[in-house]
Each structure stands twice: as structure tokens, then as C-alpha cells.
Image (cartoon, helix red, strand yellow):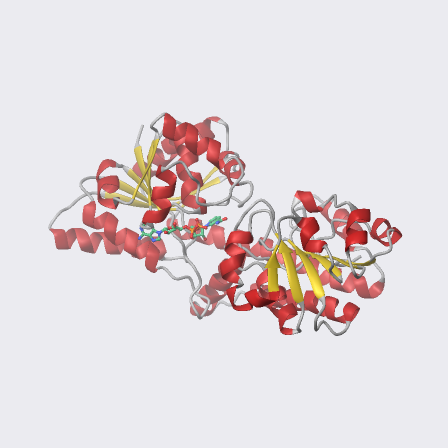
Amino acid sequence: MYNIAIIGTGYVGLVTGTSLADFGMNVTCVDNNAEKIDMLNSGKIPIYEPALDDLVERNVYYKRLTFTTNIKKAVEESEVIFIAVGTPPQEDGSADLHYVMDVAKDIATYMNGYKVIVDKSTVPVGTGQKVKKTVQNILVGRGVDYEFDVVSNPEFLREGSAIYDFTHPDRIVLGVESEKAEDIMKDVYRVLNLNEVPFVVTNIETAEMIKYASNAFLAMKISYINELANLCEKVGADVHHVAKAMGMDGRISPKFLHPGPGYGGSCFPKDTEALVKIGQQFKSPVTLIEQTIKTNENQKQLMVEKVREAMGELKDKTLGILGITFKPNTDDMREAPSLIILNELVKDGAKLQIYDPQGQKEGQWRFKDISNHMTFCEDEYEAIGNTDALIILTEWNQFRNLNLDRIKDSMNGNYFFDLRNIYQREMIEKKGFKYYCVGR
Ligand code: NAD
């Protein structure tokens, strides 16, 4: 059994570390954000991810999981070191690798013997080799000659179901350059290996590419169904039936065929941008993904147009906003469609009453520039009260079964924008609302 260090205790690092601890490993989660580590050490979870709190508590109790800011000690005491820091987009769309490279330098500085350095962050092809070179250079500078391996092990979990995804993956991708590293990684994932999760073992470059290829494909699928939804609206077709019938074709699959206000989150927007950048850099453009990005930007604007067209002048209109996170079951608002849509509505002079079950804290700082035009409410009914329209932006379960009589009575207007298609037109119109959705 190996001691494992996870450097970067965010959505991916914390879930990876906690799940591996639950598989019986000794795991140290490291972060340079002392506030985050203090929170975790006092039993609080800095992010919202269903069921994560119980899993953290259990593994801390059994002393398999610890949290620290001391990267030196964690590196010295671990054989396997995961890099799980952020790789946010830079101005030009390419991935910012400085967090990954900082960690690589730290690992090299504190290495005291053989280590497997596992890159779990999503990184452009070639990063594994850069990490290798950086570590080698520092070891030479230190006058030491420790053996090490670099592995690419991209992560495919989804926020909101991260623990399930981590513990029940469709595949584990391992980009390796030595049998020793492959064997160690298979040992780290022994529980999943025993559960017959398929392992795809490749070289490092291929593993790095698999992650971008997968995410960009899913983003493209969403943009495709969004464009079809827009077309369905024009021709009188119902995109739900179109998507359902398409999905019955095993070659297509029903997943990621849900129309809406555009994809967001910490992965698809930045990973599509990064893949486009890599294509440009190697003069092998990925034009489908270039278009996917444009389509997605346009989709958010079209949602604003939908509201404008239906309601006319928005000045002094009050809009009830249900959901601001990029999807349900997370507090993450990175690249959420709400960021564009709400700013546009406020520009038109609308006042917003907002409720999100987990996104209010992040929403308050993300929308600080337009905070005079919005109120954060206690629940969905308060957000809807006395408004001219309600707009569902995120499909939290609790928004799927609203008391329609109650909200109709409490509203001044009767516009109902269901941008996640969670209601049936007939049901809403019967209550006297004007119903707008995406593609039906
Ligand atoms: P995050 O921003 O939630 O977490 C990153 C953490 O790394 C932060 O807590 C930060 O303080 C810490 N950090 C930064 N520099 C550090 C350093 N030098 N030493 C120690 N800690 C440091 O990011 P995330 O969402 O967990 O994403 C991490 C990576 O995983 C990204 O490359 C992302 O693309 C990829 N990924 C994310 C998801 C997801 O759903 N969030 C899914 C799959 C892959």
C-alpha cells in the first residue's frame, strides 16, 4: 500500500483524495490555501458536493485522510503524488499551466526518493513531458539522482455526482512510460481494478489528448442539440422527441442531448478553448470545436433575446431567477450561463430576485458589479413573489415541482421561462402563464 499525496484540494483533489482514502489508502491532501485547509481540519467542507461531508468525516476518523499546507512533508512521506490544481484559461484561451508547473517544481525540490508524479489536472498535450523535464532539471540542480515516473491520469468526474463518478468510472485512463508506474497505478486503483473497471493504458500524450477529446465532444453534442432546438422552434418540431429518438440509436446515446441555455462549468468552456488553441498551435485546426464555442456563446444571447422578444421593454420589470449555478447539485458558478444572461437582463434595466439552493454565496461576489439590481432570496417562492416573470436557469430538483397556483397568485405578471425544459407547456398554460422553453 502506498502513501498518497494529492496536491490541490479543490473539486477534483478533494474527491480523489477522499475516495482513495475510502479505498483504504493513506492520503494527505495538500493545498496552499490555508483557509481551505483550516476549514477541512475543523470538519467543514469548502465546496458543496453531495455526500462528500460524510465520506470526509469517516476517513478522517479512521486517520486515512489528513489535510495540510505542508507540501514538503507530504512529498517526502508519499510515493504517489497527484497534481490536481486548476488549469484555468488564459486571455488567449490556452490553458494556464503555471499552477501545475509550480507544483512540479515543489515536488522536485522536496523529493527524497522514487516518486510517481500523477497529473490529474486537465492539461494540453506535452505537459507531462514538460513536468518531467522540469523535475529532472531541478534534481540535477540539487545534485541528486532520484528515479521518478510521470503519469497522466485525467479525471472524468462530474460535479454534483463526483463521488459516484470517481468510484464508478467508465474507464481509468493511464498515460505511462514504465511498467513500474503502470503497476503502481493499478495498485492505487486496485478496488476499481477488482470491480472490473476497464483500464486504458497509453503513452502520456495520448492520455492527455483523450481528456480534451472527450470533453470537447460532449460540449459539441450539447451545442448540436441546442442548435437543433432553435431550429425546432422555427419549424414546429419538438426537440424532446427528436432527442429521444436520436438517443435510442445506440451509436448516438441519449446523454448530453438536453437543450438549454448553453453549457458552462469549470471544464467544457476552458477545455474546448484549450483544444482549439492546441489545434492552432500545431496547424491542425479543430474547426468543429471552434464552431461549438461560438454556438454556445450565441445560445446564451438567444436566451436573453427570448425574454426580450416576449416581454418587450425590460426596464423596471422584476424577474424571478431560479438557479444560477452552471448545473444542479453544485455551488460552482464558473462560466455558468447565468453570468452572461443576468448581466444582459440588468443592462436592459430589469430588477432580479434570485434564489439558488447552493449558489448564493458565490453569486454574491460574482454579481457584485450589478448587486444594486438584484436581491438574493430565502427560497424559490420569495424569489418569484411580485415578479413579472420567472426564469428557470438551473434545473434543481426543488424547481421541478413548483406550486403553480401559489406562484401564479404571488406574481404580478405571467411570463414563465423554462430554459431547462422541465415543465410541460400544457400544464403551465392551463394555469394562465405564458410559457417559453427551448425547442418545443
Ligand atoms: P479547483 O480550482 O477547485 O481546485 C484547485 C485547488 O488547487 C485550489 O484549492 C487551489 O488553492 C489549489 N492550488 C493551486 N495551486 C496550488 C499549489 N501550488 N499548491 C497547492 N495547492 C494549490 O479546481 P478543480 O475544479 O478541482 O480542477 C482541477 C483540475 O481538474 C483542472 O485541471 C480541471 O480542468 C480538472 N477537472 C475538473 C473537473 C471538475 O468537475 N471540476 C472534472 C475533471 C477534471
